[in-house]
Amino acid sequence: MRDDTSWAGLDVHQEQIVVAVLRGKHREAEEFQVRHDKRGVGKLVRRLRELGGGSLQCAYEAGPCGYQLQRRLRAEGIECAVIAPSLTPVKPGERIKTDRRDARKLAEHLRAGLLTEVAAPSEAEEAARDLCRCREDAREDLMRSRHRLSKMLLRRGLVYREGNNWTHKHRRWLLALAWEHESEGIVFGDYLRAVEHLEERLKGLDAALQQLAEQDPYREPVGWLRCFRGIDTITAMTLVTELFDIARFGSPRQLMSYLGLVPSEHSSGGTRRQGSITKSGNRHVRRALVSAAWHYRHRPAVGIALRKRREGQPAAMVSLADRAQQRLHRRFMRLQLAHNKPSQVAVVAVARELVGFVWAALMYPSQRATMTG
Image (cartoon, rainbow, N blue to C red):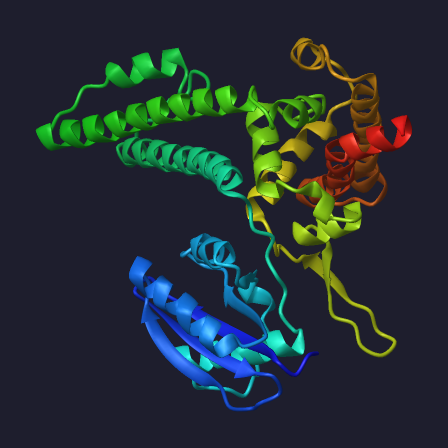
C-alpha cells in the first residue's frame, strides 16, 4: 500500500452525503458533509481532489440511491466502488450507529481490503433490468388484486367450481353476480377494475420486453436460453438483464453461490452441519430459475412450442438443452424416489444444477471463439 494513498468512505442518503477520508496510514479521518444534489456532488469532487493527494479510492454501500454517484465520480476521474452492505464487516458489540461512524468505518474497511464490490451495470443495462423488475412488480400486484377479489367473494360464500379461475367462463360468472347491497357492488366493481387495469399493464410490459428481446445485445443470449425447457422470453430476459456480465463468474459454482442456491453451513471441529439454501444474492434470478426448474419433473420431451423456440438456434445450444432435460429430470426423480425428498427441496436442487447449464449457455460466445481460434 502506498503511503500517499487516501481512502474515502461515503455514507450516501437522499438529501446528504457524509464523507470520511483517511490519508495513508493515519488513524484520524477528515470528515465533512455535502448535499446530495448536482451542486453538492461538484463540491464533493473538489474536496476529494484536495484531500486525495496522490491516489484516492472511495466507496459507498449499495442502496436506493443507485449507481449515479459512482458514475459521476468516475466521470471526474475518481475511482469509486459500490459495496455490498450485507457483506460489510460488523462488530457484534457496537451499539452506536451514526452517519459519521458509518462513513469512517467504510474508509477503514476499504483501506484494509475487507469490502466486497458490487458489479455495476451500465445505464442501458440498468434500464433493461428495471423494465424486467417493473414487469415482475406488476405480476405480483395482479396476483394480490385477484386474491382480494376472490377472498371478498369467499366471505360471501361465492366460490367458482366449474373450472379454473380467470378464464373467459369465470369472467362471465363474475359479471353475472347480483348484489343485495349497493356497497357490495361498489367494492366488487372496484376490485374487478383493479384486476383489469393490472392485466392491461402486464400485457403492455410483456410487449415491451418482447420488443427489447429482439434487439441487440439481447437477441442472441435470449434465443439460446429459450432452447431450454421452462425458459421463455420473460424468464430469459430476467436472467440476461440481472446477470448482465456472465464472465465475472469464473465457474458455475460461483454463480450458484451468488444466487443463494447453495446450502448454508455451520461447521466446527469435526462436526459439519448444512441447512437450507442461503438465499443470498439476486432473488429475481433465483425465483426465475426455481420456477423454470418445476418443468423438469416431467419426462424429457420436445413439444411444439419448444421446437418452435429452437428454430434457427445453434446445434450446440440445442444439444446442451437436451442434456439439461435428461440430467435434471433424472436428478428430480432420484431425489423424490430414492431419497424421499419433498418436491420443493428437489426442485431447488434441480434449480441449482440448472444454473450450470445457464452459465454454459451464456458463456457460449467465449467458448465458440476458443474453438474457432
